[in-house]
Image (cartoon, rainbow, N blue to C red; front, side, top):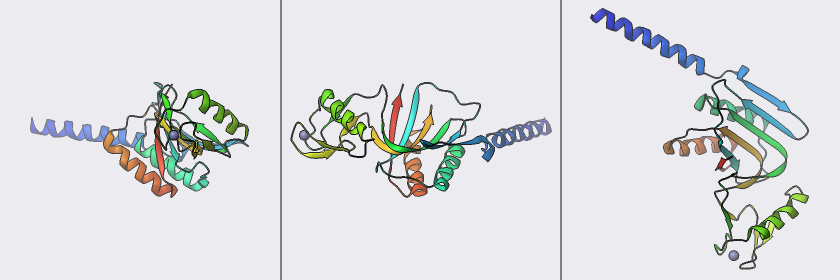
Length: 199
Ligand SMILES: [Zn+2]
């Protein structure tokens, strides 16, 4: 009886070890794609699924560009932490608006907190887009102060950046968020922020 149980435990341990090894990412799982428009690293395990939820992680500074080495380090770190999720690390040529999809509710003035009419904001966005978002200055219609489209308060949070990390269908516990941000800040030497998107 005793011997049998030990054997069962041993077999279970071996199975767990095999499973753990199978989950470990290796460089074969990471794809590189460089075009004129972007440099993209993708980790896509067979187990990955898409439910419409996506976590986007961007630097607070829209112009920030990581090195290729930093991008590789980011994807290796994330593929270890979230081995069952699809992960992308993308450096784009131009700044883009990183939206929250269906989670988008409103835009508020970062000076006085008033809601900004979507038409007003859209007009400023169209203008800034003509210039590839190189100039994000915005004069608030409510309190007539100069601000930046990136500093407005978006509900849910959104932002502008050249660099974006995407975690598809993430299952992140609240206590993992602080570590995630801290580790990415360290690898990139930048303050990063989380954008929860739904499509
Ligand atoms: Zn205002």
